[in-house]
Image (cartoon, rainbow, N blue to C red; front, side, top):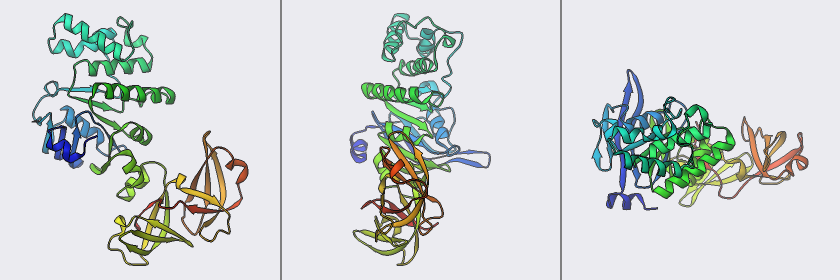
Length: 370
């Protein structure tokens, strides 16, 4: 994938938000959002309910107008351009299919409103239905289709107009877990095959991490971090991102030292090495919060000299792994979650067992204590 600088230099920015703000009465729904989406890129807006991610999508689509800032698509400012002239394909959370129309007519709707001649319309509808694996269902009505099939119709309708940008508003939320996973894979394959610039909205962290080229994490109307899924998961830039994206343990600690190579934090009797970027300006001994992923912790003997001591209070079997919940009063008021692959942990560390918890070298991030 091209770097951001390369994309900007060769004109590959397809969607651009520049300091965009949107208010509803006294509520600031989106505040100073700036974001570039490159040609062919799959960018996800991720955040909790009410964070502004769907408002950003609706601003791109033209369903809402910004109060300030600029929105551009394919190099043209579109603040005052109506939706149908923006070159966007939209897939809604509830699919928004016309119940009285056949599958083929639903897919063809956007082409008819653009006055595409019938022969060309029929050809493009057939190609779109083949792309989403719905050949032979042209004459069915939406009520005759499963949820997954209805979603495919909605996707075909968005794709058939050959949009410059595909906008997706939580399209998998109504599907069961197994179907959701298969549709995620299929959508990503179609997106890559067509080279479609895509902006996707979800509150599902695993969905965002598994599908995206980049993730923009939002909170309270602002983008808190933009990066690859690995960057956002492994090197969050603030406590909210560290706690919201994936499972995380928050440990109490104090700063021992900080230098060019990183920082050392004491958590109970354990010394943990972390990046120093989030601790700049802190004095030695200052309280910090350390965020560690469950898979970055290991169970060791309770008398290990560099381990946090605790007691197993719960086991959560997840098939491919077991999550152990461990009380460690010296490190956190909450339980530590330690992830162990396989199922041996069930017998090896039963409820009530005293254990030590060690931190994987180079794991975790730290910030000044809240």
